[in-house]
Length: 219
Image (cartoon, rainbow, N blue to C red; front, side):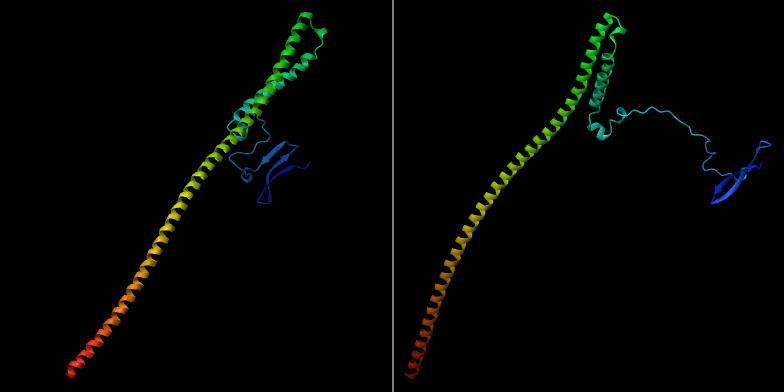
């Protein structure tokens, strides 16, 4: 029988690391050629570690689970478990128990069904009411915001009205000023005409003085 070879695939090449002789039951390993990743050789079996995991309770900090009302979810699960457990009590054969125990069993299974139903559907209705209350508050806040916005728009419109009145008064003042400027320009025109007449009279007077001086020269 040929011996069995043990090889490692290192850098794309097969490297002999040991040899096993089944006849002599001898295993020869070449420790210098054996290379493992890490500080120790890998495990030769799969270790199964049992761990208990809670699904709902430790995850309350997650936003989606917190928004889904986890306590109400627990109550719904509890109510469902009680309701389903009552099925076994209703299906129990009365011949297996005494009459007194059967009377107590009838009461117990009825109460278990009622409590389970009330717990499950009560929690479900509470979740529905919570969602309704949240959306109702959002609508109320929106209405309050719209009311405040309308008030601000009203105040802004009043300020715009006051501003328009001020602009109207300013335009009236500008009109009066333009009228005053027109009257002033008319007065300046009349004054210029008077100055022109005065200059003409001065010219005539100078001509008369010239004629008078000529007459005096002839004398």
